[in-house]
Length: 184
Image (cartoon, rainbow, N blue to C red; front, side, top):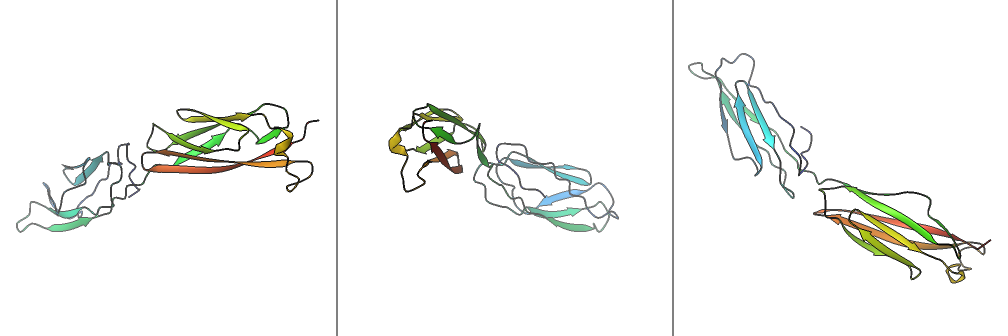
């Protein structure tokens, strides 16, 4: 069974007794399903559906199913439901390059995860500022000659921006190296 994702309907999971059994069938769960999930018998099929909550631990629901024979034929059933946290991704719109004396701007967008709100943490050098707007953060500024350290390369500089975004229990991080070229 594929993992269930919080905030979305879990897949319908049919479970059927052995083919030699005679209907009608009686489904008996051994223990309760996690909050947000329900089990509904439909003849020879048991449907597990619903929306699992965030932070759910894996569970292994199981039980017994019996038929209408006398004595009834019984079979046990068990499977595991694993709730995975949705993944957040950070994308940008272009190359990470700046030129001394020229305005620089780059927008990074968060997507995925359990949804909004997104919370950003941004570490930038002094010449850059970060502007957060929901799922996006724009990093902008104008590099000066001081951002061209000779220790990197005589003709270019390199500066680093650290981005972290969270939404609920999900998080993503990204390190961006911005190459700074001298003015022409």
